[in-house]
Image (cartoon, rainbow, N blue to C red):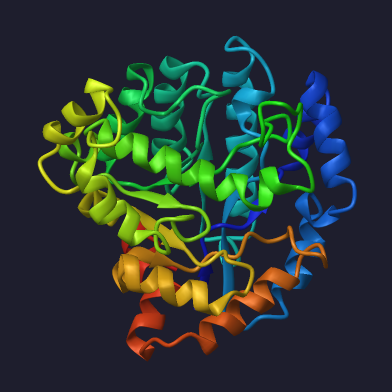
Length: 336
């Protein structure tokens, strides 16, 4: 079985409500009007039928819940999204063995409550967060209870990048040009979020915490040397006393913590990058994910290309079996 742990969808009721949410609604209308499979469940099932043994653990597409409204509104939006996801899974359990809950991260107290509701009542397999919360880093103390709760539940956190085109590449400009904010900004964004969590001491507090990073750990596999020997010298390049102090607080090398994350195979068919990620994380920490349906064909392309890359990748049959389904069954407690 091929268990896709990072495809994206919008439950219909949530989608309709989301489009009413001010500027975020206008943004999503532009993005989704040409991708009907995001909301058309029948079309999604027809596309899935093309690939033998292929099932999906559903995740909500961006934008983050917290980008859709203030903290008084987002808890209701998260509940609407998660109820819709649970309804889809209940209607097609053989096609969708689980879903990932969304959280109102701009309301941390409500987010913890939604974790308990979604996992206990709706049987969510974990939760999705983004690499920042409306520009706030994830290592702020307000968000620590969310990580603590997920560590206690021993279920994964999915981390999705978030960075808009208004995040300029140069201080003299107002926006990032040529989609660089997405193509290169999103991997950078994910990598920085991972680093901030590492140096916050998160894994020393919660050594069994499971965080699945979208797109195979972003920059980390390729930049292992910089994250290793480079960050071992933290504090030697600047006069900021916080840098050296942060390194001394950690119980292990920074690189050791980076390898405690998990990665998915959503690399759009780049099999060499997949091999790099496998070498970095190891077969027990890589899961099959496609980023469906954001390919140029609006649905089938990234599924097909990711499977082709999996078959082409230099890995043993046992390693591929772990990536395709074994790791998902173990981490997400999937029984289908």
